[in-house]
Length: 272
Image (cartoon, rainbow, N blue to C red; front, side, top):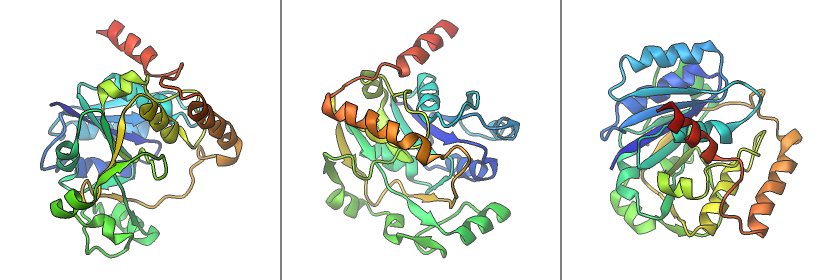
């Protein structure tokens, strides 16, 4: 089984550098790493070129023009270029435990997606990590909250991970799914512009298509660097429209979106 790791980012190359370092040190490496870049300045492209030279697997920079917060579209762009049958997706400020990919691969199950959790790093500890290029965090590290999410245990994972049929707690910051399931629902809905609810609407369509949710506990540990709102995180302007799109998918039991992955797949096929 080939596995692709997608890392979404926007104008935060210092954090992305730490995330990539942690990805390079995985016990089980993905077959490729794709940086899904929602219009960052040239510093991010420069970083990707530099780190591609030291990456143990192909590192692909997928960039789109900055036209506001278009997370759904850049995710589809990266997914269209994936060679992996199984896709692990994280945000560009999530530092990975060395067993992160291994845990997701071991936990994978057909016709299911996995929802992981995150450990929150304080503002002070984040600043220290960025200044000193420290990406090694663990259960006993200072400056972290919700510490139980930093505990990795095969036994507890087996005991306490389970199915869930609701969208509460859905976060694309630590999620894994089969590429054919994503293609089934036409990927993320690119009608979502601006922050909020694109993850939930995507999961609603997965549910409507028969794909189940499995919560991955005590494994796939990831440490979330602190950040404030960036200039594309405008909840007040777009959230109402995004809530309406989510409600539409729920009420109409939609299985596919109209503006989604398909258009990128067609372009990708033409390029090959």
